[in-house]
Length: 287
Image (cartoon, rainbow, N blue to C red; front, side, top):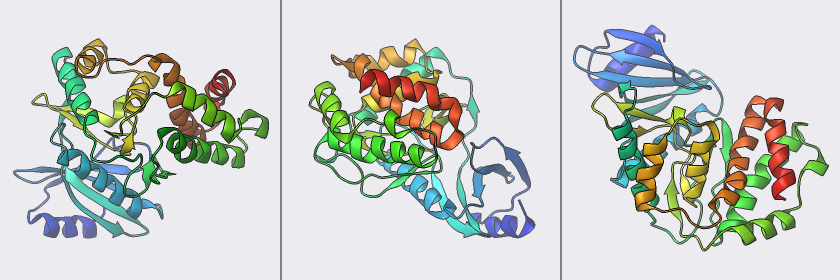
């Protein structure tokens, strides 16, 4: 981090940053811990041409999560252009290894988040990003049409354009509509984190669960739960406490593959052919 940016951050924060330390901050941005005499801050920097709109969308997502009063998220301070990209300044949350009791609390709070429904439509007021990929949140009255048109089809199209899937690998929109309509129950829109793997939550030093790096929208709460199962890291206490508030519905296991397909397609488009086999497996068995 250069001296000019540090000086500007001193001005924004009305304090003097004494120490700047690079820390782990994800796959697509550089991340820093900023320390003054009395406070700590977190700053992400991305040099890409999409950085400003990505960080603005992330900030709005964190603020939307906080407004529910169900689960914690870092406070957002400032998003601004920086060189060819942008920076995002926010609260630093010191984390620790989660206990079983803290994961149970996380499960309960996520269930309360999923009970938040301020809309009759699926989607959100604006589009955002999942990783560095664009995520369309166009409003739909019907969950099947939203999931097929705003989630599966854009990622399948991108994978085809990148040469990662063949035309014969991709089912027709009609086939996807029919299969999803048969599997999806009558769904009330829930506010979702949208990208809930183990790298996108943390437990603070005082035992409070925090959500980070959201890709929020209103959808079926099972999407978040399916993502937690994809790469693991949540544990029985999390699921047991979640289920005390939102019990499983018939057909959830059958829907899990279709919901994980979106995330596997995202990983295919971001990271390449190592994700081809699981994507093709779900496409062939579900459609």
